[in-house]
Amino acid sequence: MQHLYQTVPTKEKTTFSKWLKIGLCFALPSIFLSAGNISPHNYKPLETDLSDYQKLKAREAAQIFNKICKTVKDTRKAPTFNFIYNYQGKPYYNAYYSPSNNTINFGEGIYDLAADLGADSLDIVATVMAHEIAHFYKDHGWAHAFGKANPDNDIKKNVKESMYDSDDRARMEAEADYFGGIFGYMSGYNTLGVGGAFFDKLYDALEIPDETFGYPSRQDRIAIYNNSKEMLEELIPVFNTANLLNLVRRYEKASMCYDHVIVTFPSREMYNNAGVALAQEAMSMYSPEELKFVYPFGLDLDTRLSHAGTKGAGESKEDKRLRLAKDALDLFNDALRIDDQYAPAYVNAALAHCLLGEYEMALGLANKAIQFAATNDNKLLVGNGHIARGIAFALSNQKADAKKEFKAAESGNALLATTNLDAVTNNVFAKLFKKKISEEIEGEEETIAEVGVEAIEVLFDDKDAFKSIDIKKQNEKRPETVVVTVEEEDFDATLVATYSGPWSAKEELEGFLMTKPDYEGETARGIKIGSSLDAIKKLYGKPTRMLGGSQNNFVFYEKTGLIFLLDADNNVTRWLIYGKVK
Image (tube, rainbow, N blue to C red; front, side, top):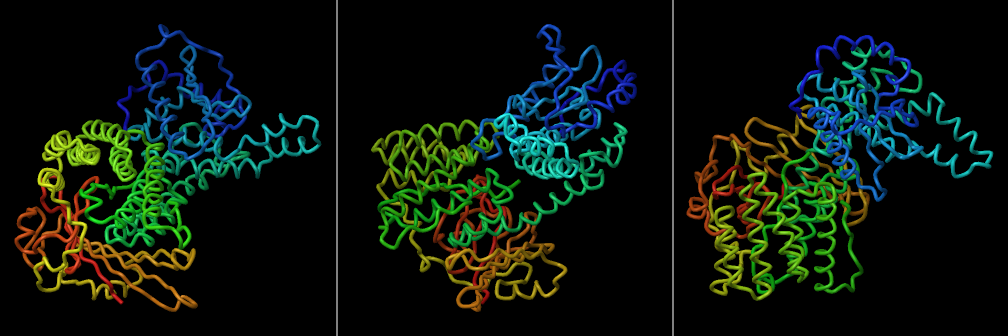
């Protein structure tokens, strides 16, 4: 992520080496890391003393700080942020968390250094910022706070001394590197991609010794970022598998996969999609006559859960579906706490309020969804926002307003807009939630690049070619699950194995094959990427089910085991085949 930065003026550059060497004994060893340091600068310039670029730097730094703090799911109030300006042309190369007054202080010199290093300047600023934020959220100021709270306690001395113990400090700095990298990455910055390389450049540029008292070594710090990046990359197949399981209504398995990811990476997409799983499960407990409309609950297939569990057996269907809708709403709100401009979660929250009969709330949230989706030029999400408003109006007996909203949605999501408009105009309930397998046109087995679901096990014979993630058993409903993925030239393959029963002896295998976005082949009946929905219906019949998404709509042919992904113009972007392998 690059900032349109200015390079440091020539005059400042001429003093660069001089001030590095002077500052080396003071500010430099505490860059990112100096929990407990106090800034030597009390310089508070007037607005009129600052250049426009300095104001921009302070504003950008504050925005990065606020975004990362919002991403960290923590009930504590974030520290106060201070941007420390360079003084009399002397760069301030320091950033630190101070527990004594609960502030995070960021030097303008660090910003300049990041900008001077080039294309990833904002990601580098976020790397430094997230490190200091991690000091706060990982309680690295606890010893200082304990000492102030217990001034007469003998333990105070030992606790305070431990703050300056080399091993303890190195541990805290390593934790701040690790969690800071994760926090920044969750906030949308490529901290894990640039962190290791930046440390390498930083140690050279500032002449910091490879081994410094109280800090991990240079190589260890680089390894922390690189290993964290590899760890998150290993979670991507689990996230994708959760989305696939969500699509085919394996909600418990999907929740288990989201749960596995969210422990390490509780991002907005995780909470959003986990909420969709619960909302869809709630919707499955409504009859078509009760539901009446097609709800565009949006899965977000791109990334960067705690499942509510099951109540007692005496819970009625009505109580359970309301509980699931409320739990889904909580997860959508969690996503919005991380990113309050995240349009998919606004759409989904609006739809959850519709299920709960809270139509005014639904209208307000749908308005925000439309606003933020339009800002990002996502016409499918704009359409989904209008559909959510239409459903809210229709369910509150304002049919004229509902029709206006469904018509407004046609330019963004014609498929679901026309279906819902037909429902409210002709009083025809959206029966697509009922399985209509008999309306599918039967045909030959589907394959992708001549590979079918039943033959998917063959892909995993070469153990070096695939990734395998083992998710431990949580309870009988969440047995041990193994996710195995492999990338081929034309498709991505996923095998989900669950082991249940005594000694986990019962094995169940489900397989998924999804085309690559640039796949040049065809389905068994001649559909290819770019084909229209009308062409699909002509060859496959009416879909048995439809689902809205943030980037795509999905149409299902459940007897065939086939799902098409459609863009806002109802053209095929990808498709997948699925089914039981064993």
